Amino acid sequence: MPSVTGEIKAEFAVRSGLTQLVHKYHASPLKIAKTFRYENETLIQDAHPADQLGVYMMDCSPGLMSGDHYEINVRLGEGARVFLTNQSFTKVHPSEVGHGSTQRQTLHLEADALLEYIPEPLMLYKDASLVAEMDVHLSLGSALILSDVCCPGRTQRGEIFQYSRYMNRMKVWHGKELIFYQNQRIEPQTMQLSAPGCWERETHLGNLYIFSDRLKQLHLEKVLESLEKLEGVEVRIGASLTHKYGLIVTVMGRHAWELQLALTKAWHDIRLSLLALTPLMVNK
Image: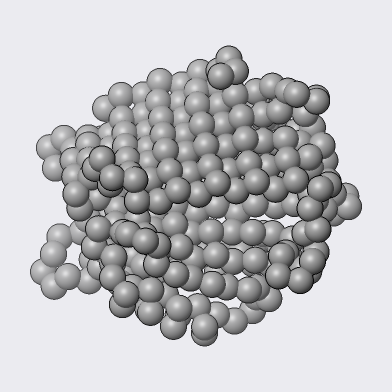
C-alpha cells in the first residue's frame, strides 16, 4: 500500500436529537469544511422535519498527482443523517509509469443511519492512472445513496479517453454478508471503447447506487417511470435491482452536466419513494 498523502476521518453521531460531527481528522491537502444543517421536509403526515448534517470535503491541491494516495473514512452512528459532497471535480493528473494515483474510501453506517454521498465528477487527464476502492458496511435499517460521474478527460482540449487506466472496485456488506461487488477496469489504449455494445458514441459514465434493506420492486418502477419523462438531455439510461438490497441507475452521455441532471432526478425520486423526504436542494 502506498504512503498516504491525503487523509480524512469523520465520525457522526446523534446528540440531543441532532446529528453532530463528533470526531474529525484531516491531513493536507484534504480538509473537512465547516458543517451546516438541513431540515428536510417529510411527506409523512404530522411528522417533524428530519434533521440532516451537510458536510463538504475540500482538496487544496490541484488534484491527485503521480504516486498520491488518498484515504477517506466516514462513520455514521445509529440514526445519524449526513449529506456529504466535495467542493469541485476530483482531478487526476498524468502519472509516471508504475506510479499511478490511488484512493481508498471506507463507509460505516450503523442502524437506521442515512448517508447521501454526492461528489462532483471525476476528471481523468491525459496519461492519468487511478485505482479507486470503496468498502461500504451497512447495518439494519441504514441507507446509502451514492453517485459517481466519470469524465474521459478535458474534452475541450481534445483529451477523450487519453488516460492510461481507471480501476474502480466497490464492495458492500450488510452486516457480515457481502451483498454487492463491482470491479471495473478501463484501459482505453487496449480496448475498443467505441465498438457496438460498448461505449459507442458516448464518452461519460455515471451511476447512482442506492443500498437499503427497505428497497422493493416498486422503487425501481417509480425511478424508471420518472426518468422516462426526463427532457432536455441526450443520455442513455438503465436501472435495475441488484441481487440483494440494492438499486443502481446507470447513465451514459457526452456531457457531465447532462449525467448530473439525470442522476439528480433519480436521487430526488428515491428520496421521495424510499425515504418520504422532499428533494434536498444543494447550492454550490
